[in-house]
Image (tube, one colour):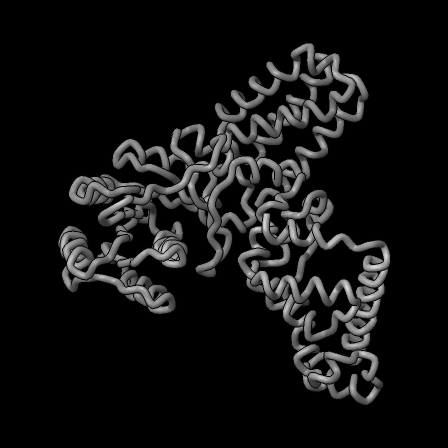
Length: 441
C-alpha cells in the first residue's frame, strides 16, 4: 500500500539531505514538497499540516542546522514524527485476568469484520484461550454461515439464533459461554454499507448490555477519507477502544492509515494484510514508519521466520549450510516455510533498502509455485544428489512438473550458484552466532 508514498518521500528527503548543509530555505522547500506528497496520498489536510509544522519546528533547531550529519538528523526527525502520528507505542488488547473476556467487533459491511473475528479468534486460541464466537450479524444474508465456515476451519464453536434478534443472540451466547467455561467471547455485530442511525443505536445498545472488555472498530484502509469519517462517527456514538485496519495489502494511497489515529484519537491495534486467517499482525507504529521511509522492517521479518521454523529445523539447516550439504530437499522445506510467511512482495518490503528499489516491479508469487513443482517432480535421490540430473532426467522432471526443460535447467543452474555462494560463506569463518541471534533474540 505504501510503495508510492515511500518512493516519493525518499526522493524528497534525498533532495534536502544531498545538499550537504541544511538551511531554512532548503528545509522549507523540502517540507512543502512532503506536504504535497502527503495530501496526494489522501492524508487528511489538518493531519498533514500539523505534521509538517512539527517537523519544521524541530528541523530548524540549531542542533540540526549545525550538525555534521544533517541529512541523518532530518530523516530521524521525520521518522520520529511519523511514529507519533501513527500512535507512538504499540497497544495490546485488554484481556481479563479472571472471568470471561468479551471482545465486541463493530464496523461497516464489507470492511472485513466477520473475517477479522475469525482471525483474532485464531490468534487468541493459539495463546491458549477457549473461544466462543457469537453471530450477532443477523441481517446480512449468509453472514452467520460465513462465520461458521471460518470457525469450523479453526475448530471453534459459534453461537447463533434463528430469529433476527441480535440482543437475544448476544445474551444467550454469553450465558452459554459461562455455562461451558469459555474464557473468551468474540461478538460479530451487524454492519451497513454506510453509517446510519439504526446501526449505531444497535451497536451502542449491545455495548451497553455486554459492557465488553474491548471494543474494536474494523475499517477498510482502502476507502480513504471515508474510512476516517466512519471511524469518527462510530467513535462518537459507540466509543470503541481500538482500530483494526484491513486490506493493508491493497493498492490504495495509504492516507487513511496515516490520518485515522490523529483524527479519532484511538490507537490502531491490528492490521490485516491478506485474506487468509493467518494474515493478521499486531500494529507497531515505529515499524510502519520505518517501512514508509524505505528502511524496511527486519524485526517483523525475523518474527515471521521464527513463527514458521522450529528451532530444531533451524539448527539442522545451519549445520547443513556450514558443511555445504544444502540440497533440493532442504530447499523445498524453505520454500514451504516462505509460503507460510505471506506473499513475496510483502516479505521483500520488510527488507531494508529493497522497498523503493522494487517500486512498480511485478513480484510474481507463482514463480515460487513453479520452483516447488519442479522439485516435487524429482526423485528423493535427485533432490539429495543434484549432480546426477542429466538430460533425460531433466526432460522427465519438466514433463512431470508441467514446465519446460529451460525452466528446469535455469533452476538447477541457479541452485548451483547458490551453493557456491554458501561455500564461500563457510570458508570465510561463517559466524553461526549470527544465525542463533536471529532465531532466539
